[in-house]
Length: 366
Ligand SMILES: *Cc1c(COP(=O)(O)O)cnc(C)c1O
Image 1 (cartoon, helix red, strand yellow):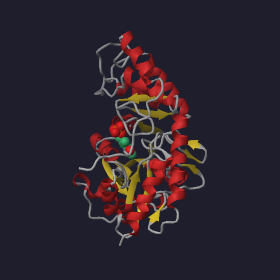
Image 2 (tube, protein in one colour):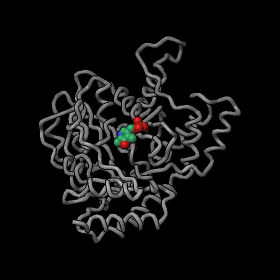
Image 3 (cartoon, helix red, strand yellow):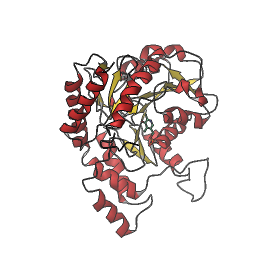
Image 4 (cartoon, helix red, strand yellow):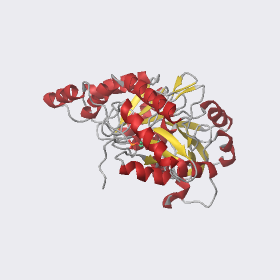
């Protein structure tokens, strides 16, 4: 095993994290009651230009809760991009509904808006959009299709905190947005998640279902089967400290991506990450495509140099639980060629230069 010298991701904890966590412990508020939870929900939803924020125990729980909030369940179908992290599809599966996969587009690597309509049936209830690796999907086209067919739209913004589509914050453009605060996400609470919405009824419904669906007026009376998907005060304390630095973190990520772009732009075997004019890409990961079947070898050689990287997600239609014979040529191609490179706040320019030099050297070999 070669030693990892430059990791793919690393949380940036140089702020008030420790101070706020100490406050929780000293005051005894370590569970899901306490001032940090409400503060974090309020300030994160404000950051997202959304009226309400409902914190959850993780991003997967946030997607599941969003679907349950909309009343989606057995017999329903939900449109999901074929290229995403498995949690998006699994959350649909948990409700008893069926995830229906749509191929990616080459332009943004996100769900192809042109291919959604052909997958809509009388059973379709919602579309989950994923803003993959930090680049927003084409929300205007997707919202048009949804409106025409009377479908809900959920934005899985787990990889795109702070990204903009035509000046609007992702997670606030549709009925419900969902975010993750896992260790490698743009900001982290260790594990954690959030639903954002502008709709008062959806906010109330999501909170009710998240907190065991307990009646407001009668303790221990539960008119429905609910969940315990709460975030703790300790996690929210970390989240609040992270949120104080989120604009700096995003600025850094964009800067890192520009440095990579300038160093890799002349390589003929590399396709740089998408950057549409009308969006702000927040580069959760710095991601490139490697042509000519050289991706896997590149990753192996980088590992030998102590540089961590990740391949793109395996498309949903290739996983045992969701296997399909149908063809998804674009997502298959992205999945075969895509690689995520280190993109964390404290990476040094000299490290990025080192990574790019190695990449170019490895790709020059026959
Ligand atoms: C990380 C992620 C999730 C799940 O978040 P967890 O907090 O790990 O449960 C869901 N969807 C996407 C696209 C993600 O990247």
